[in-house]
Length: 245
Image 1: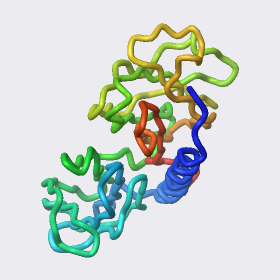
Image 2 (image 1 turned 60 degrees about the vertical axis):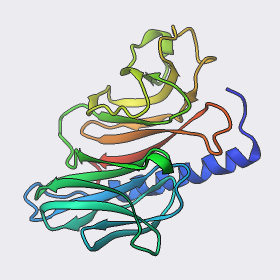
Image 3 (image 1 turned 30 degrees about the vertical axis):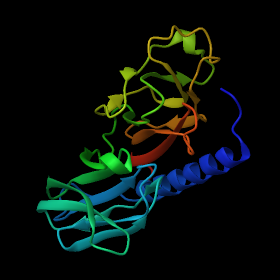
């Protein structure tokens, strides 16, 4: 993949930093399944939508969110709600979705797609480490321009040719459930769907090495590089469960 231009590099660094900061926030939060509250976070990944506010009915959940933002979890009273995405500073509704939120559960409200087709997705998160369970990852493809991909998690010291993909033909709009992966340090590598792995030259994304700890869970969101002048992927990560917290 060709090197990023300075502008793209700055944008990628900004989004990566946001993702890292939010992952640390989320990783520091661990909520008991016996909690009397539900807990909700918002991930905003619509590339061309101006800043937005998020409401639960008439109550604000988050303000002034922009592309690449991951909030920390906030407690809400369990129940059925309409979640709306409003233009920041107004109550102009851009998108709405109804959802049920149960006590003791964690949820992600994902705001994605283009401004013209803005939509929300409500996902139940794995909020507690499942010791001694294997680590798990969840993949969400919000990269409209990059095409479907095969996703590999390559352990340290191994080559992509020696491992099988954890997900294949992951297309725009598709999200997986939580997928068990091997514990230890690994690198996420993504190839165009159907590509026979002979190395990383054809990779549309090669991540940094990360430590996947038993009982942990994280969400990886595939995005088009911004500005999206050509197909190229970036990935932001949110920590859903962290045994160390």
